Image (cartoon, rainbow, N blue to C red; front, side):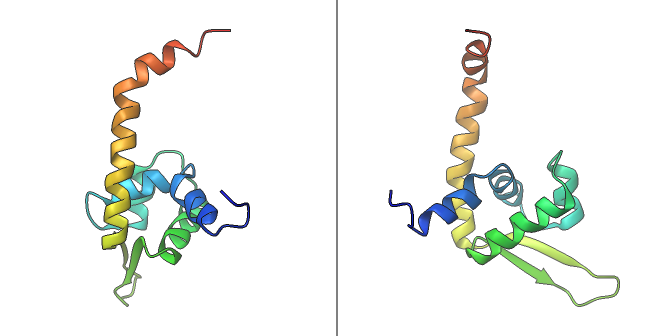
Length: 109
């Protein structure tokens, strides 16, 4: 809980607006950048690149460059990323299951 604890940076990257969606999408298997962007509606190219770089620096995502022209790069989860994605998936599943109950509170004063 300390303000300077490095775990806060990891938590921010995992639970940020895009981190969870990237992990969940990659849980289905390797994806190219453009495929990720299409699958995750609303994410800008810049934000997706930043999110992938952060998750890669934490050891959650592996970037594979095939060294071809035109460039072919794929992203996939590492074993650590697969573990995180399973936990993210549980939370996302709970949110979907409870969304009607959660949404019923939005109109309350």
